[in-house]
Length: 485
Image 1: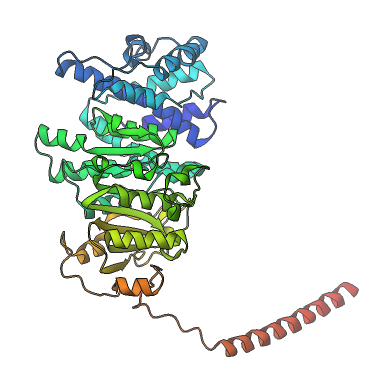
Image 2: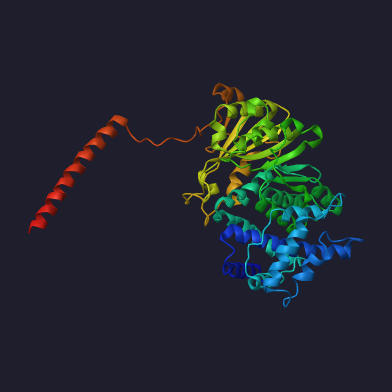
C-alpha cells in the first residue's frame, strides 16, 4: 500500500471536522490514533513470540477490539466511547511497578492527549484508514517510518510546534561524529520528537548491532526527557516505529525541574546529544535549582550547565547552541569558563542562519566537547550553503552530504591531521580568555568586501539625494502643467 497516500487521505478527512483546528491539532490527533494501532500490532506479535506476554492495554480498549472492524461502532456512540471510556481508562492505568512496564508508556502518552474530533462518522473513517496499515509488515513499517519523519518535518508549519524539530541532516551529522556504541548511556535531556534518538539507533544498528544481546544493550542504554505533551507523544510513537519494545525511557518531565546538585554520580552518562530550546525562558523558580553564579531564566544556558554536570569522565557531547551563547556576557561568560575548565571544547561548527528556516532565522552552532580535561585549543569549521544556492529553505533543506567536507576534514575519531583551510581555523584557550570568553570568532580567512572609503560614500549619497530631489521637483512641474491643459 502507499502510506503517503493513506495518510494524506486521513488528513483530508480530518480537515472536514470542525473540532480539528490547524496542523498541530491534526498531528496530535493522528499520533495518539497511530500509537494505539502500532502498539496493538506490536502486542499481537509479542503475544506470539514471548511466553506469558500481556498487553499493557485492557482488553476492551485494545485496537483490535473496538477499532479494527470497519463496520464497528461509529457516530455519537464512538465519540462517547473514546471520550468517556477509552481516554479515562488509559490516563488512569495502574502501573505494575516491574521493570519495562509498558503501562507507563501508555499512561504517559495519554496523560495530556485529547480527542479533537467532533464527528463520530469522520472519526470512524479515519480509524478505518489507519487500520489499513500493518505495522508488523517490515516493508510497510519502513515506508511509514519514512513518512513519519516527513510528518515531523511538517511541524515546521505548525507555528510554535516547529521548535520540536531539528533538521535530520544536523542530527545525523552530530550522531555520526559522536559515534555512540551499544552499552554507552546516551541521553537527550530535551528530546523533542526523538530525532537524536532515532539517528543514534540507526547509527548503532548499521555499525555495531549484530546480535539480540547487542540490541538489548543498545535499548537499555537510551535515556530521554521531553517537557511538552505533543513532542513527547510523537517521540514515543517514533520509538515504537523503530522497533523499541519499551520506550518508557522517554520520560514526560522537565529535566531542569530538579536541583543541579541532585544529579549524582550514578546518574552520569557517556553521551549527550541534544538541541535544547533556545530563546525560551523557564518558569519562575526553575533557576533556583542552579548555583547562584549560573542562575538565569534562559533555557539553553541552564541546559549547558546541566550537560557539563551530567557527563562522566571522558563522556562526550554534541549540542546545538545559538550565536548568543558564543558572544553573550554575564552568566554566559561564567558558563563558557566552566565548560572550558571542565571539558575539552575541541570543535565548534558554525552553521548559516537558514538551517532552521522557515520557523527560525538564527545563527546556530554545533559544540562538540569531552569531559575530563580543560580546553587547550578550539577548532572552528564554517559550514557554507552549497554553491549556486543562496540559503537553505523548505524546498532546498540542508542534507547530510552537505556536511561531507567537514567529515573529510574532521580527522577521524582521534581528530588527527586537522589543518587550517578557507573554512577551518584554530584558536587557543588563552585567546578565548583574553576576549573574556567571547567565542564568536569570525573566519579569519574570509576577505571582507571593500565597500570603499566612508567619507567618499557619504559625499556620493548626499549628491544622489540632491539629484533625486531635483528630479522630484521636475516631475511635479510636469504633472502640474499637464493638469492645467
